Amino acid sequence: MTEQQQLLPLRPGEILALKRNERGLSLGEAAKGSGISRYLLEALESGNTEHVPGIYLKGHYRKYARFLEVEDEAFDSQVDDIDCSAAELRTIFQGKENGSNGERWLKVSGYLAASVMIVALAWQFTHEAVRFSQGDSPARSKTSVSESSETVSADRADESAERTHLNASIAAVEVLRQPVAEPAGPDAAAEAWDAIRDPAASAGEHLLVIETSADSWVEIYGENESRLEMDLVRAGSSREYRGKGPFNITIGRASAVILTMDGEAVDLEPHTHDDVASLLLATAPADESSGAGKTDSH
Image: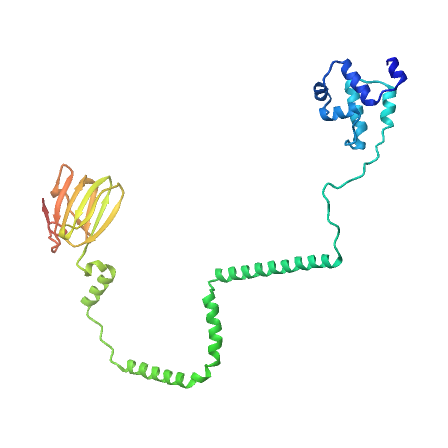
């Protein structure tokens, strides 16, 4: 310690600043080595530590001293004498003084009213959602209200209701007294069943079915050159077509196609050349040799 230091004791911050300068360290290097921010080191060395909480101030001084390897009883004594009493707490924002009891009750009442309103809205929303999920509707609610109002006038309509029931009973008896029609013959029953099973048959239409085991090009034209199909039918497909004949049919890769009309197989081999079948399938009664409608090669 110099003679000047003996005559005029240095403050803890000044001792630390001299020691740092003796070691040739800048504030940045000292901050990096000690783990204390440069802003705080400047405050410690200058003694402007009013903004540093007293409870931490001694610890910062001792940590900085250990880094600079300061071993001085005078330094330790001065650090111990630092006043670490808590500084007076001051609010940054100006707070509003507490209101009167009337204002507090007004706030509480407002909160309660808002809470009740929120609960009521939530209950109504939940109730409407449940009614909607159960198939109820506002119209149905109105219907129940109208039904309750109609109950009041139900007694007045007893006489007219009785007359209506009596007339209905008489009409039912007259119907029961009418002779029952005898069932139709077996041919009529079969025709009716066929019409139900295949409605297109009663309209003069025919059912064509194509099943493929390989990709095949199919063109089908019906009555008046109406196009029923013009597409590549993929392998493993089964397609149905309804229409009136005669049917102009062209099938590529005919060997991989099975054609039926109204459930009867159509032989494509007589009409196939280079695995392409081209035929005109008529709708006349089946010929024993062909197995289905008459066919003509193009």
